[in-house]
Image 1 (spheres, one colour):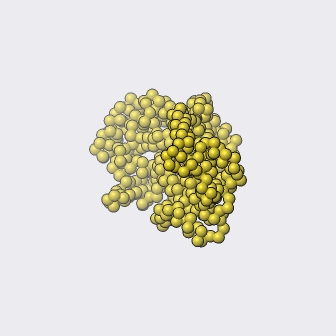
Image 2 (cartoon, rainbow over the protein chains, first blue to last red):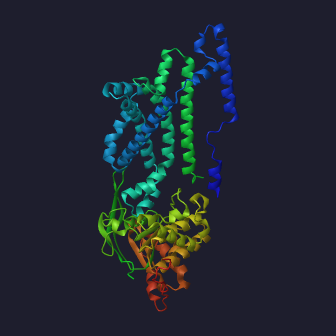
Image 3 (cartoon, chains in turn orange, red):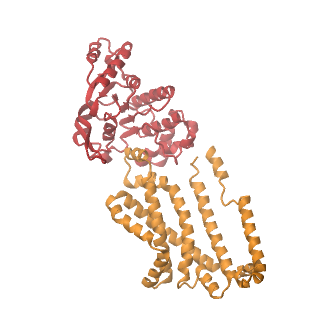
Length: 257
Length: 281
C-alpha cells in the first residue's frame, strides 16, 4: 500500500550535502579566525578554537540539560492542554470567543522580556516564574493555531458528521481533533523553537540550574567557549525535540498522500 | 418487525436572512408532503429551488421557520438525539474522513451509536463486502477511486440500517456507468433494508429510474407535481421525462401530468418486491 511505503520513506533529520558543506565552511572560517585573532586585534577569548570549545564540552553538566528539558516539556504540555481546551470552548461559544480573542491578541503582543519582569515581580518561586513565562508565551500560539484549524475544518465534513447526530464530545473526538492534528504538529514545532529560546532567557533571571543559568555563569566568566558549548547543546536539544515531533508526525499522519 | 415511521411535512416554511444584504429569502414556502414507510421518493427541482434546504430540514440540522416535519410523531430537529442511528445520509461528495480507512469510515456511525467494537467491525465489513470493497477495507480514501469512495459512503449510511435514508445528489458527480451501477445498488439495498429513501436529484433519468414517486419542486420548493411512477408504463417514460421538464421550466404543472392517472389500467407495481428483512444484519 502507498501509505506503507510512505511510512518507511519519511526523512527525519536528514543532512543533505549542501547543509554539511555550509557547516564545514563555517567551522573552517571560525577556526581560522580563532588562530588569526591576535593578528587582527581581536581578543583571543572572543573567538575560541574548537579545541577550547571541546574542552568546554567536558564541563557540560547533564543535570542542567535535564532541568531545562523538563521545564520546556512540562510547560509545553501545560500550554498545549490550556490552549486546546480554550480553543474548543471558543469554537463552541461565539460570545466567549468575542471576549477572549482581543485579550489573547494583547497577550501575544507583550514582549518576552516584559513577561519575565512581571514574573519576577509577581511570583517568588523560580520554577513557577519560568513555567508562567513559557505558558504565557506558548499557550496563545497553541490556542490561536488550533482555533483557526478548527474553523478551517471543511463545512462538508462538519455537516456530514452532524447528520449522524454525534454528541458534542464525539463531534470533537471523532472529527475536530483528528482534523486539526496536522496543525497541532506544526504548532508544536513552532512552540518548541520558541520555548527553547524563551526558557534560556527566563533561566537567566533567578534560576540556579538549567542551561540559561549556565550561560549566565559563562558570561560572568567571559568564557565564550562555554557560551558556545552551551549554545550548541541548546541547538542540539532543539533539533532532537523537532526530530521527535517530526517522527511522531510521520507516524500519525501516514494517511496523507 | 416495526417498519420505518411515516413522514409528514405540513405547512413547512423556511426563511433565511442573507448576512450581506440583511434581506429575507424564502427557501421553502408552505410545503405539504406525506411519505409512506418504505417508499422511495425522488425529489427533483432546478438549482436553488430549496431541495438542499429541505434535505437539511429532514436531517434536523435546520429548524423550520413555520410548519412541521414529523417522522412518526417526532421532529428531527426538536428531537434530534432520538434519531441517532435512525436517519442516514449520502451526500454529493463522498465526505469520507481522510484519516480513516474505508473500514473505519464505514463504522463511524456505529461508533456514534455506541455499538461494541466487535459488532462495529463485523457490520462495517459486511457492508463493505456487499458493496464489493472487501479487498480495500484498509485503504485510505485517497487510495480509492471516486466510485469506490462513494461506495464507502453508501456502506457508511447503510451500516446503521436506518429507517430513513437521505441522498443528496449522491450519484450526480460520477460517470454515467458508475452512477447507474451505484444507483441500482443503493435502491436494492434500500429495499432490502426496508428503509424509506428520499433522493434529491436534478437528473430526471435518475428520478424516473429510482423513485416510486417523483416530487417536483418549483421555486421556493412549491410542490408542482407528485407523480407515482407506477402509474406510467415504461414505454411512456420518455413522455414522463418531457412532462417533468416542461413542469420545471414553466414552474407550473404540465397538463399532461393527468395522463399518468389515466394509465392506471396497467399499473406496474414498483417496489412490490421489497423485502422487509434487514438482510445485512
